[in-house]
Length: 140
Image (cartoon, rainbow, N blue to C red):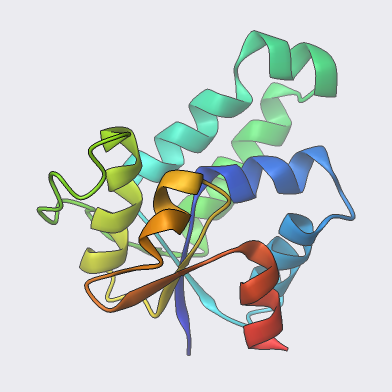
């Protein structure tokens, strides 16, 4: 089964636009079309981002909505430490390196992101970095 790391922006976008392409990626994961590889750092980033006051106000996420997603991420994924040494891979935004570390630790087949710092790399250690559209085309 395809092992895939999703960047935080894919999770957040899927919740903001329920019928958008990121939501289709999440639906494909829930339908077990691929194995989601994730690390505690990515889960924490998703949780933190969804708790931003401006996002909570605008999109009316409840604590339960966020808790449900976090529980799903803990229980329906391949959880890896995300401690691989990738330092210096993204000098313009080192915070994005958690995604690369997760992909390396989880022996991912690809990374899916909307982040320009990651997408500019196109691949890392042989792991392709795809846009949401490219990924959806890949899984058909």
